[in-house]
Length: 136
Image (cartoon, rainbow, N blue to C red; front, top):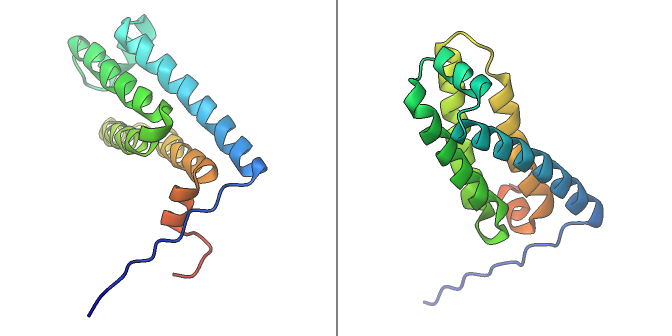
């Protein structure tokens, strides 16, 4: 008995979906790069915020480097899904720290949703993988 696997090609996103996805991606990327570079350069607000959440000052550069690498991987179209996964892990840590510090955690949650929404809107493979609104 022979089994075949048929893979249906991912539909190309519409022009409006692609544009919306790119705009959301650009907003996310700019913020992530700003945050990562501020941490790497040890900008005073970034250091103060990180220390307030319970990290030591010497961890700020490490955290910024992790975010910068994850963002660069997200920027490259071939590795964008891996970058989104890494950013999701980073933001999950941010949620955990915010909750431990009794701070509102809505920003990293919404930001994580936006990272994936941008991929969903601009990448037909992600859209077919998630299959929202289709037959389950």
